[in-house]
Length: 171
Image 1 (cartoon, rainbow, N blue to C red):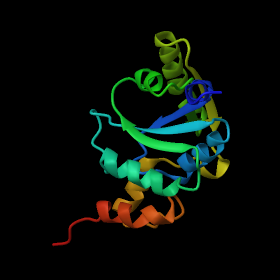
Image 2: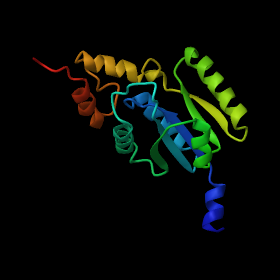
Image 3: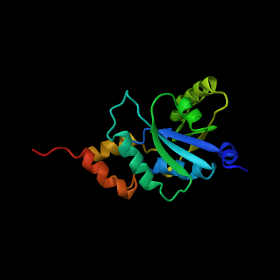
Image 4: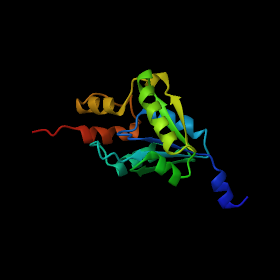
């Protein structure tokens, strides 16, 4: 098998998100879905409609640091339509994490839209570990802004980065 044939026969998945910041819930989905694919791409969305705490480059570096133990995981940023990014990366599956039933309706709508635009790309849903079902990046940011303890929500190596960004300037 040539290198080109190997690349085209690879099973590639994409796990997209804002990851602002990455949480243990995100990491749970990354670790589990990395076992399903030859290559898993964590796609950090550059959403112009949102004002993120961290730049896309900072989020990519944070995710790379907490997924360095996973040989088949790549992290990069993208903007535009997810299906266009998936086609560019030759991915056949989009991975989405679900915390609760409330996530499902939105995620199903997005999956159906993506499927309509690009029928050759499927979406799979993984439910997060129950330990993290309540957890979101916005909760982490809010707790950090009030100087609460966030180490139970995010990997240790990014705790100081989040605390620094959320620290209120002292007069």
